[in-house]
Amino acid sequence: MAGNTNTDILLVSPTSTPIPFSINDKQAGAFAAFTVDLLVYPLDTLKTRMQSQDYSRLYLNASKTAINKPALFRGLYQGVGSVIIATLPSSGAFFTTYEGVKSLLAAHNPTLSNSSSPLLPQPLVHSAASSVAELVSCAILTPAEVIKQNAQMVDASAANATNATLHTLARFRSNPLALWRGYTALAGRNLPFTALQFPMFERLKEAFRKHRNDRGTRTGTLLESGVITALSAGSAGAVAAVVTTPVDVVKTRIMLAAAEGATEAQNPHSGGGGGAANATGPKGVVDAMGKSIKSGKAGIADAPGNASKPSSRKSSFAIGREIVQEHGFKGLWRGGALRAVWTMIGSGLYLGVYESGRIYLARRRGGELDEKDIF
Image (cartoon, rainbow, N blue to C red; front, side, top):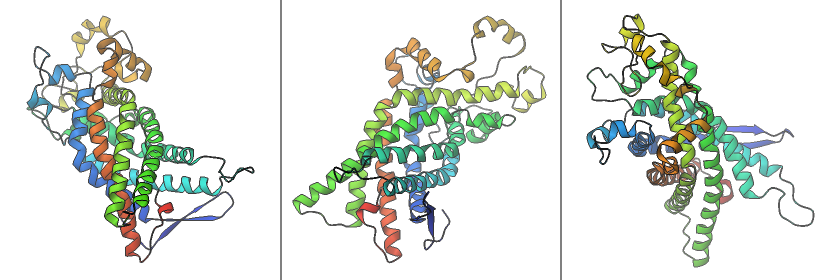
């Protein structure tokens, strides 16, 4: 992120009291997100493919008993460009909002008259701050997530395949608003995730620090601070990831279906001789999985089976019910273990690098961050 490290952002409270908030927070968060995205992206691609409704058809052998490894592990970095571009502003917006809302709530959190305890407990303050921050971040991140997940499903070995991201973007050319179709689903996953992760993260970090202080082994070094944060964030993230896996499976289905909706809007009556169809390649219009879109007489023949609402328009509840009908309740947990592993790695590195970056930038300016100022 470009910016002057000597510049401070002043968040003005309702009482017009300025709350100093350093732009270092945005820089550190963006750098951390950029670093981690590159490292754990292949695991995210595997998770998306496992949660796809076409997992059995595309990534299992004919008997559906073994993984078709070349297909499953091919093109693991497809779509990474869109995420990298969106990560910097979305992560910066998240941490700016999180720190600002947390400071604002802390400054206006009254103390109970009969005790020294604040009216709102710290876990509730952290949950509220992270929830507001997530809503802001999701608005920026949703288009990139939709592009990313559809690009992850493109068959890179197809003869007519171009760059997976460009292939996916072409699907939304005449209906770009479809890129935000997964906003509710993304927020519906991230809100409970952050509401669970951040209070656990804060509590674990405090417990680790207290344990080292009690044993007299606390050093206060940059490395120690990063390791404590990484362990706390990784553990909290893994638990939150497992708990929210069903919501994540539904979110994946909705975002993959967004491309279908964009294609429907672009070619509602696509036929073999249409100009738009011919522009996509010799096989006509293809979906995010590289399959040709049926049209003409084929579409009429399939009409009885397509009487229900198209998948791109189904609600989260309807999609969840379909998953249970097809695979049982275990289908809602598909990819949960993999998601927990990559979330543990990603959250640990992400927040570890973020906190270390804040401390480093503060020291470079000749100052120090108190523990209470970190998260």
